[in-house]
Image 1 (cartoon, rainbow, N blue to C red):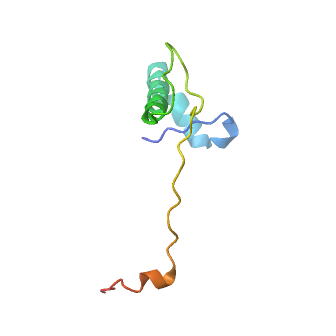
Image 2: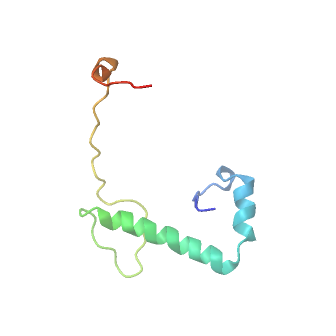
Length: 86
């Protein structure tokens, strides 16, 4: 299983995922937790507006969220130029 789910509510996680998680050794669970922490920090550091974390600093949420650009909505008449080959 390559998907790692994180939730503060244990009821959000399916039973088979709980069984999979607790079947792992403590070292494997620690490695998965470290992987989540590293991913969170990589995402945090990807935003240049976020201040640097101190030694041992934790990422809870972005300090300065990135504004997401709105993508244009495609209308059916916009697809008229497409060629369909069967």
